[in-house]
Image (cartoon, rainbow, N blue to C red; front, side, top):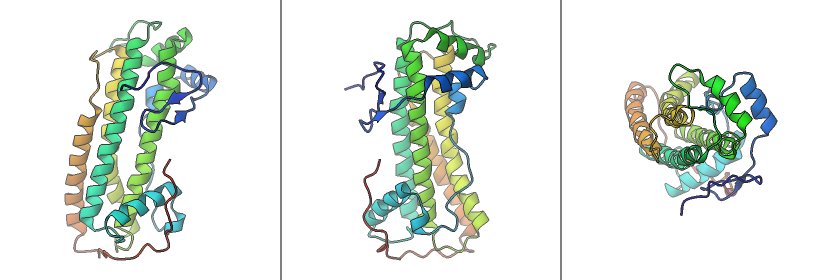
Length: 265
């Protein structure tokens, strides 16, 4: 069954987790748009330095710890993960990300289809920051749903992915002899292409919402996921070949001090 797109004052029901997502405050969004901040620009993937260098297990976010407990148990509780296992988990996590983005992106597209009280579409020569203030002034409930609920939920999905991906980098390289700078570079080399493709999928949706380009009924964000996984594989081959002779890759250690994972949000 297709998730309901009907706007509701009680918040957006996440079709993936069936939990209710509180919308962003209207006045915050409107004031940002009034100053030239466009909603889709705000929804782009985060880019920040690798945060887990030198951290111990109990210094990681709980969300990351819970994920690592589940992952390592599935591989016989070996820490750090062997490279083949880390690669498989990165691929699986990336595929899951783009499956989730496909759901949310298609709800955004469907909401734009359902919106009726909107300004004329922009063309390639019109700056979209002049369209958004007029669109929000008209107060179409489906446009409001896109800005206040759906885009924030998309941001949440990507942010969660980054935390879990960073956790996989951490567990694979936990006891390696790679210098901190090399670990950070490796993380960026693996992660940033995925975020680039997530943003490419977002741009595809943005073009339809703002300009009604490619007016099709579905957005195939999972195609970008296939490209992202391919990029991860190529990056791993290139980077690990460089460092294979310079680092050690221990494959056994017991996570007995990790405890039981809390319920994942």
